[in-house]
Image (cartoon, rainbow over all chains, first blue to last red; front, side, top):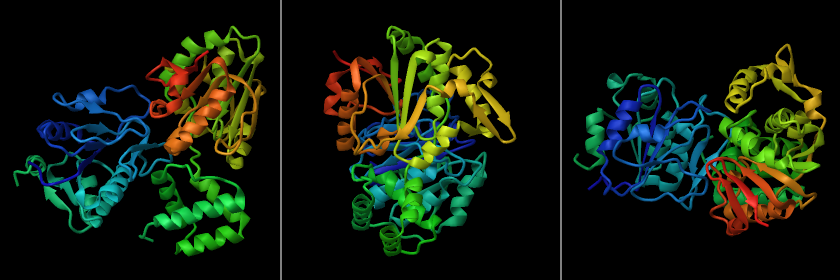
Length: 186
Length: 273
């Protein structure tokens, strides 16, 4: 079961690592929608982030032009923006920082909103800047669903709070409720 | 301005640019280029796509600004330090066998990766017998690259990259700092020739032992990737090397059978026979 989404896209920054791991581990393999994760990370330091994020699931850093597949979890690579093309393949972009970030959550959210429209579930977690807020608004504007981690429970509230301030229709949830929502128990 | 550029408008714009100015963006990956066009419209405070088309048709300077905006001009020295380490350890020793070495940096932007290569060659004792041909489609990038001047702010990151790439010298030996800028030493730049070359429309111009084209392919669709790979294949000497960006792959292109993989993670390939 799930709430009928075609894709789940999750953005996080400072303070999001542990809650992100918790959410990812709660998503069972049989849940079809691809999961795309954008996490602010150091740019040129070798990292095993994919392995750190989940103990149960394999997390792929996609290469350019790789198709977006069901049942798979993807992490935006360091130092690239991650976009999705209309034919549902990934496109990596090495243009300017957006909101001081590359990867930028806004860029991924907005490109996924363009392609998946109402089938998009966007989730924005803890973070100390406003990256992702604009993108979450675009997901909602495209008919999709936008959730933020309750700022009161977030280690850094600025990111979820900016989304709440910027667009109507954002749903505020605890991490436990986000997990339940994804697997369709609410 | 909230509305997007429709697909029909997008195709119109691409077609005007091609007919009027000879720049062919037809094979570019749409997600990124549409976004950049949209940003350009906001930046220029254009209120409609109609206005964009109108200015494009009538104003050459406007077009130059558009090219500056929609081509990606971001680069770093020693981007992906481990890639440079692999070049040092696995590729340059092979190039050392040639009496004269020719390298092509395609899509060199403002030159940071070209200067990085010159430093590697210098440290390997190969620079004096190497010619580096560095090309880009955007003339404004080349004008900047030729000066050898970079913002001082970036040097801290670049120094870190350099050290991680296996560099042992004092990085500041390679430039002189003045006010807010640095000048890359002339000895490092004198083997480099910068000139305009468009991977979409221009042809083979020499034969190379190594072609570096990093983070350029991502902006192309698969058809264009195929044709540019053919251009590179034709421009390589037998057993010549091709280095791409670490998240770029030729696995979706038919021509990949004509290359062998030298380093799978750092995307270094070699022309067969």
